[in-house]
Amino acid sequence: MLTLSILLPLIASLALAVRAAWSETMARLIAMAASGSSLLLLVLVWIGFDSGADAPAFQAVGELQWIPTLGVAWRVGVDGMALAISLMSGLLFLCAIAWPADYKGRARQYYAWFLFLQGVSLGLFLTLDLLVFYVFFDLSLVGMYFLIGRWGHGDAEYAALKFFIYTLAGSLAILLAILGLVLANDTLTFDMRELIAAQPLQGADVRSSLVLLGFLVGFAIKTPLVPFHTWLPLAHVEAPGPASAILAGVLLKMGTYGIVRIPFSMMRETFSAYAFPLAIVAVISILWGAIVALGQTNLKRRIAYTSVNHMGYTVLGIAAAGAAIGGDAARSLALNGAITEMVAHGLITGSLFLMAGSFWQRSGTYELSAYGGLARVAPKLMIGFFLAAFASFGLPALAGFVAEFQIFAGTFAIYPWLAAIGLIGILITAALFLSMLQQIFFGELPDQRQSFADLNRTEAGFLALLLALVVLIGIYPGWLLAMIETGSAFLPLQGTEG
Image (cartoon, rainbow, N blue to C red):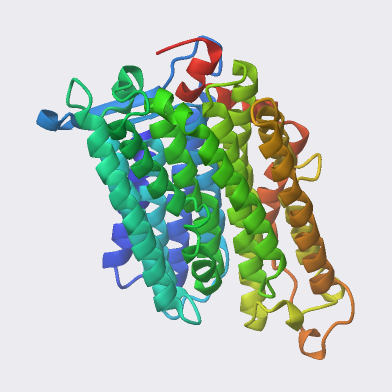
């Protein structure tokens, strides 16, 4: 089922690309059916997923030999982290595909690229082969490049080029690091399970440090962390709203997921030696992202910088979990919080960018000064925006609070001063969202916004689905936390190997 969940969007993408006779309505129906079927397969895997204490590290495993002489194979499987992020990604793709957009007369191609991106994104999260991971990592750049460049607005082509060049440079660093890690192993294999068990590089010698640096730089560009974040705001501003939702909700998670899956899990001793510097970079990203976001007058750019801030929270939790100090319980709490933040941020910021796309569709501008008093004409949009914004800055009973509480509670036991400094970012994030909400929805309604349309039935329905999960995780997070903890990354923190 995991293989089918990857292949179905890819096959539908190919069909849309070559079948020129299909109308916009038919293309939309095919895209939603393929995306929804892929998500349904993941839900079936979830139903059969074992979250018990004796559950295997990876489940629903499938393997087909590809290049035996190099130890490369089609390997798929899930632990709790991969399953949680894949389910979130599949749902967000379905909502983004269904969300109204300006197709610029190329609806069939638009949906084809979205399905292509869904297939390769799920492939990255579900694969257990390092080389296949790298292939999917690079292919995801292609899909987003065309979605920004062909369906974006403003200086879309330059934004797409900058996105592609930056992230391709990061992927090359990751490729070199993968080769260094694999060649250090006694047996030539790209099987993630074997490399996690073997721990081929240990200590803080030059070779191990360089391999770790390659991984961290490559994934820091994708995440992104300061100072590798400069490609992100422009890409978000110029991309269509649904593409921005996928960029923030899914593609950024490839960076933090990659850190946990590869250097954190396969180079534990080396990672712990550099956990503190990584935590410092994470705190800088938290503060920088929040402070710069506060100064933005463009709606999309402000949300984009909060992604830098929130990905900083995630990396802080990962760094604390990988530290050589502190108890296993505190490090496990920090790691669970980091992974929960990946899921929560995908749902919350994905919702914010979908709604930002609706602002552009209705008014053709993201400038905050162009709005005001929209609560009178768009109450459904106001409710959705308020709920997503409150979740983003960690209001209790919402998903963001569950994630950030775990991150900071775990980090306080390991790096208390860094955790205390990082909390300032939450205060700034609250201020920037509250001021933005006040400016958009309260005050006088400009004359040119008198006819501003509220969310239609399609937009309101899919937004309600995303935000319902945000509330569910905030009120009853146990089901998600239990799933996440059933994973290979947590085994050393539970006194278990294998």
